[in-house]
Structure formats: C-alpha cells, structure tokens
Length: 447
Image 1: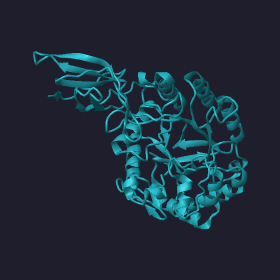
Image 2: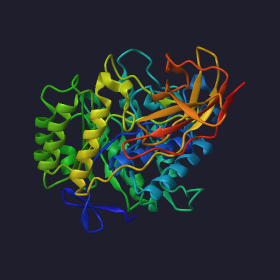
Image 3: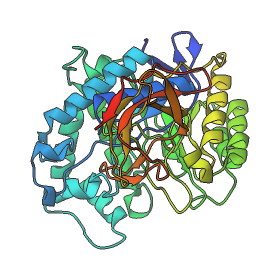
Image 4: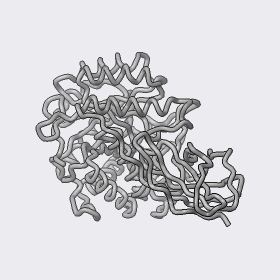
C-alpha cells in the first residue's frame, strides 16, 4: 500500500482518488488479534477500504496502574506494552487486508477513561455532573498535563512495530491521526482547543511528515479548521438526537463549506433506518464528500458468539453480514446497503463475498441454560447443525438456521438459541452464506 496524500479537498491513493463508505470499528484497539482480523476481514468484505478505531484507553485511578486492565495509558508517562502490541498486530492485519485506519487519540468522556482519567493522574479531575467542558479546558490549558499527553503522542508516532518492524510514522495502513473523538471546542474551551490542537499537530509533525491530520472537533462546521493549513481532513458526527436537520442536508452544507479547502468525512452517523441511510449515501456519492463511517461494527468473540453493544432502546451495534436477530433495527438490510454503496463510491465491482471459514465448536452439552457455543466465521449468515444418526454413518439436520449467541463487552452471554435441545450424541456444524458453505467441523461428542 502507498501512503495517502491530500490534494486540495480530495485524498489520493497513488494516482487514484480515495473515497469510501464504511463503518466504525471502535473495539479494534482492545480485542484479540483473532477478533481484530475478524473485524478487518468483515470491513474488507463490505468493501469499506477505511475504518476508524476508538481512542486510546486511559486507566482510571481506581483501576490502579497494572497492565492487566488492558488500558493503553496506565499513568503519567506509563504505557502498557501489551496494549501497544495489540496495535502492532492490528496494523499488520490492516496491511495484509488492504484496509486503512483512522486513529483518534483522546476522548472527552469517561467511557474509555479519556480526558477525565488523564486529568486525574495529576489530581485535577472535576467529578461533578456535566463537567465535560470544564475537564477539557483543564486538559487543554494545564502545562503539566499538556506536556505529559504530548509525550504519549510522540511515543505513539515514533513507535517501531514489534511484529512488522515498521515505524508507525511510516506505516501506510494509517490513513490519519485524529486529535480526538468529539473534543469540546465551544464556549470557554474554544480558544484553548485551537491552541492545544496546534501543539498536538506540531508534536506529530516533528517526527511524522507522512500521515494526514484529522481535526477531532466533530459536532459542527469550524472556520478555524477550514483556515488552518496543517489540518488535512475535517469530520462531522450526525445522530438524530444532536442535529436539527436531515442528514443529507447537513452533509451538503458540510461539503459546501469546506469545498476546495479540506477533505471532509462523515466520521460517525447512525440510529437511522436503511431508507434514510440510502438518501445520505446517495448525497455523499453525488456531492464529493470523501467518505462516511456508519456507527458501528462489532466482532465475533473468541469465547463464542458475537459481541453486541446496545446503543439505545432500538439500536445495537452491527455485525457483518447481519442476522435475523438484528431484525428490529434492520441489520441485514443496512449491511447490504452499506456494502452496495461502498462499492459504488469506489467504482469497484461488487463480487460475491467469500465462502465462510469452518466454525469451531467450543462445547455442547445437555445444559438447558447453555447448550451450544461456537466460534463463528467471518461473513457467515447462519449455521447448520447436524447430529449423527443411530446407524453411526449418516447425519441429519437438527437446526438449519442457527445464529450466534450475543455477548456483552465483558463476555457475558446475553442472548442464546433458547429453543435448541441437545442430548447425548455426536454433532457437527458448518457456516453458511449466500456464496456457499464451509466444511463441516469435526464431530463434537456429548457423553
């Protein structure tokens, strides 16, 4: 892969303009290499070309400073090498699969530790309700906190990948460094953000002249971003509860404002149905916006099943290529539509997705609460389960359209195939999609 370049308001992969319709994958930095590859292969099958991680996680003081938390930033100038190796492996997978990633650095919310947890390393966290902007203002302005954070930025940019040997600052899988996710830039944080952002850019540019810079203030149109020659990409996030116009009109206004100045992307959007999404996708394709990223994709779990994250009363995270369990929020149709439009914007022919790999049965039992668990296959729509007949030779289908159980982010099963009844005997399964079927697994025997 080549490094991506910006020319005016367009991005280029060599001589070809890079445009994309794809999906955010916020767990990419925090899951196992197998799960990372499942996500990246899913995005490749969608035709997405680009994805975006969530921010680097920050330990809270109450979690302690041990690497067992899995967080990236354990304390002041204390970074988790095992977490950094996860990013090393992710970049290896992205290069192998031809997928680019956008990496945002810090988050203003406490969900991932973020700015509040970083401030807390220095005893300067504000813990009151509705303190997001006040914590951000401290983070932007306090010299001690700024210097500590920019040391982390410098460490990331100059890291040598322990898997590939490539310096991050030279890695073509990285499309852009993003200053953060939805960083506050309004009210009392306005001038402070712009000053902080310039220093963040300077910190990167001292070492990395290769990668694009994405402004992480994502809730509106900013003249300051349009006028800053060091910012390559601008982004906007759109959800029904935070905007007062339809998404296609907002995207048109966004494109018109930055046209000729910056490459623009819809960094996040979601909580709409396929009909509204199709209107938005068609507007993006027509008006010249560089790309869009739906919120959001989750992985198959190595513990079995797939991870489902609840967004609100209706919407959950998406799983490629969708299953009947996501019928309530049109998962199958949204995945089909996103893949179709991903190929349309890139000008590539939409080929059949690969036949899924063979799944792996973890266990089967007569326990009514948890009878069957398996590691799923990228691109599988459903699974077939057979049992060995009494003759010991032939097999019969006992479930023709099994779907995976759902797990939460902590691995707890929150939904299962409750109508499945297993007894003593031999079982095997295979993964199925519209292209074909995997091989059958080796028999699993319940004694």
